[in-house]
Length: 115
Image (tube, rainbow, N blue to C red):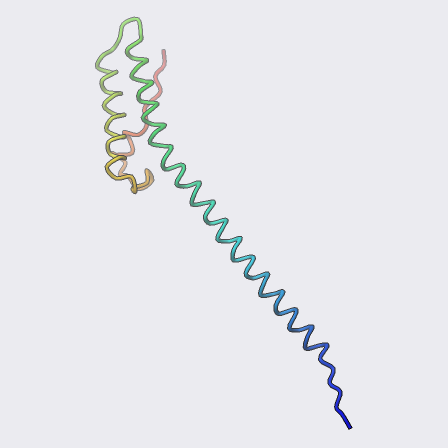
């Protein structure tokens, strides 16, 4: 005489565990990809911001020089600010702007000039 064992429930539970494991692995991968995207956006900002500040300072310098009566001192100051900020960022590219001292950070932004 033989024994018959119904393994249907056990097989169904094993399949459900495998689907759960796969879903957890998928969520972990999505979380890693999301984190990488956020890191990429943050790095892009940290790279672009000092460049944008230098461009702003250069444009400010040009505006001071191309006025009817060029103001060499203001142009010199705008050029110095742009050069200082660019030089500082080139010396320590790993330091995000958000970690700069308020004095360092002040040189990365030029006040807007009114004509």
